[in-house]
Amino acid sequence: MKIKHILFSTLLILAATMAHALDIQPYTAATLAAAQKADKPVALHFHADWCPTCRAQTAVLQELKAEKGLDLTVLVVNYDTEKALKRRFKVNAQSTLVVLKGQKEVARLVGDTSSSGIRNALKSAL
Image 1 (cartoon, rainbow, N blue to C red):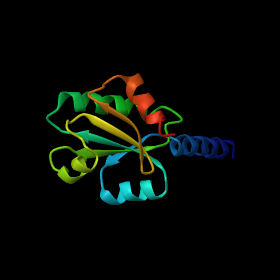
Image 2 (image 1 turned 60 degrees about the vertical axis):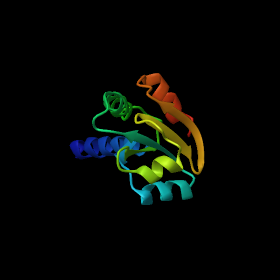
Image 3 (image 1 turned 90 degrees about the horizontal axis):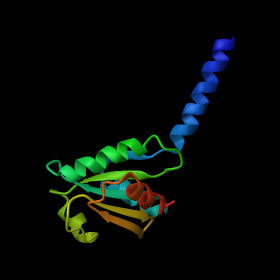
């Protein structure tokens, strides 16, 4: 009985932690539209597989997933194929991170691979 109680408590803590964590997923127009319609924080990471700066940013984003309080979604946008989205957000370089709170852009980074820079940009939407 005691083991069941410990397991249940652990699951509750894990669920609470995951509920307020950075979520990284591939970009879809539907996901972006839903986040903007609900006035939720979302970031667009314009990423190219061939870009070393993009890979460094991805590593930082993966590290930030463990941080509490970063309750937002990062949508990874294929820089090479999502031309209309690049025009819409006036993105001229891969390794661009556009942070939105609903429809409003609240931060933009280009080429920044620092944990503090990326963290601060993401937090600006919360």
